[in-house]
Image (tube, rainbow, N blue to C red):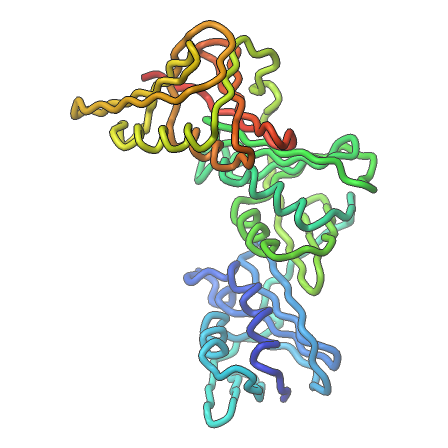
Length: 366
């Protein structure tokens, strides 16, 4: 099989699928990209058995065929070739040669029929939404996902469909991030699925500059998101997500409204002398200010004050400074509202300009 393709037409889809292909794999074929050529275009597929990425590009007058080659080697070659160059491929059973000008390369190939297939199953729920909405839903929650937690269902992102709304939730047991928004044309069903952590990060990366509508297709064991000439698919995490609504404070007895930048800067300064492992910071809230304190095992101390609009009795509470900073950095408005049910309860952090996302941080003993 022979075909020709412009460097840029191959490099862009290759860059889109490369993120899911690990540098080290127990199965050698998972280091490869599957390339399928027909008269109308070229389809590139990458997978790690958990996530699958497919990108398409146009091509004219090519012979049909399928083959696999090492993905990162092919991308490095394309990246280093001159712009506007045309690549001439010649595919043989165990070797693939490509030539661009006076540059010539020969890559090892593995049989395309051995490339793992990704079973999508019967479609159960389908809807369309704007890609920027999906991107924002991931951006506002993904940072709170757990990493390698024994509670495997926390190592992912909850996507919930209910009453014409889409909701994403992430938690590592110490904090929680929630985003919700109504979507026109949402099916009248209630469904929860858990996307794997790697899939969430890859989808967020791929949606970074997409402005067109995205189609979400959910089956029993996987989810597929299609936008433009690209398709993302991921196997769902099995298990039931915890009842996250129980940790959202319902009635706040103490509320503080504070400048986001002032609080962020004070937290960053005080955290310098906090315990390196636990990052604990004490907040004394009352009398029109928030006083922040931190100390470490070397008996070093830090203290700072930030003005705030406070209602309710004065109280003190401890938090992990990193968790507070992550939530505050996810807020877009100039001020944030921090709500507490009691001195030992969790903190609800809200964006005063956008009620679609909320953040909860659990307290810690200091």
